[in-house]
Amino acid sequence: MNKLSIVILAAGQSTRMKSELPKVLHPLAGKPMVQYAVEMAAELTSEKPLLVVGNGAGQVRRAVGDQVIYVEQRELLGTGHALLQARPLLEGRSETVLVWYADMPLLSVDTLRRLLELHEERKGPIAMLTVEADDPMGFGRILRDEAGQVVGIVEEAVATDAQKAIRELNCGVYCFDGDWLWPHLAQLPLSPKGEYYLTDIVAMAVAEGQVVEALKIDDVTEIRGINDRTHLAQAEAAMRQRINKKWMLEGVTLLAPALIFIDATVEIGQDTTIYPNTYLQGATTIGRQCHLGPNTIVRDSTIGDGCTVEASVVEGAILEDNADVGPFSHLRKGAHLAQGVHVGNFAEVKNSYLGPGSKMGHFSYLGDATVGQEVNIGAGTITCNYDGQRKHPTIIEDGAFIGSDTMLVAPVRVGAGAKIGAGSVVTHDIPPGSVAYGVPARVKGKVKEK
Image (tube, rainbow, N blue to C red; front, side, top):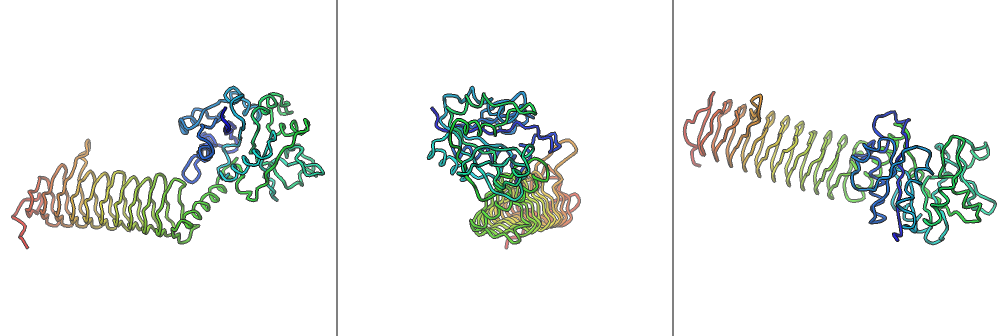
């Protein structure tokens, strides 16, 4: 028998989001909302969680993949009915069933561990999370008796004025004894709305003389659900604040943290400094002692140690140690700057490699190019790599010097140590060690030895 099984409920209609995208797939700090729940489950058990899907089930399956076991709620008959769909897979196989909703991305794994510990210690049928808050957020209220024991949950829609004044709220996170859960779940009463509410199971336990345990948490932010775009924006702000705090505690300097946006998928090395209006997005890794920004976007890229990127866009690119870019440059997909490469201002690099120590001046474009080491590319140099039908490569070998305003009409190769005069149009290969200039460029001699 598996000791712990996790069920994540993600079958809601999401009508208030007013979107063709299922609510649980809306991105939060660079990840689909549901991914936070899936990753927390992976920290708690090696067993795949069950994900109960309904609205947009196909889209959810494509986004989440094989990280979970899918259970489909074909008729959306309430939260109790949603959990009941997991019964055939879990009954008799789990001592403990942990349940929460996929639209609670700010919930922490530490809180879930504390709930599991309480359930393990008390051995009751149910342990649940509660929180005290001035804003009820539409949550159900926790009813307690004179002894302080939980006796039920009343939903806001049917609560009396006195009950609405209760500040202790139901968080919608439950830990159940597996053997007790399934037969009782099947006995839930039908609500006036024609649905089966999971909250009603608490009163069932109390009616049997069972004790329902409650773990009251302090941080109301953790349990804020997301039902519409305003909630999504609030959760985004809270998540980004949490991410920024994490990196500052890890030794990263954020100047004006409120103006720096770091996705949950990003990794950053110590002693890196990030300036305002910088966005680090997607599968991005930043090394140590870098300077990024201001006004910079880095997306799905790898940046080594000691790099500087100022007021530029870097996407799908690699920067090795001590490379620098900008300001006002664009590294596109496939750009690879080796150690110590300099790319100046108003430059663009796409699907190209620049070897160690090479320098690319301002107002230049490299596309589908391979550049050797210690190459100088003058301002205004353009690789003419597209003939209207196909892309063609440009190769510039070690130590070459490309003068300003040069056009390299691909396919073309400039040999090692060659020099191209300013304003040239290179339409044929230039041999190593040659001097060439003109329109079209012609070889005029050899580079003089120093």
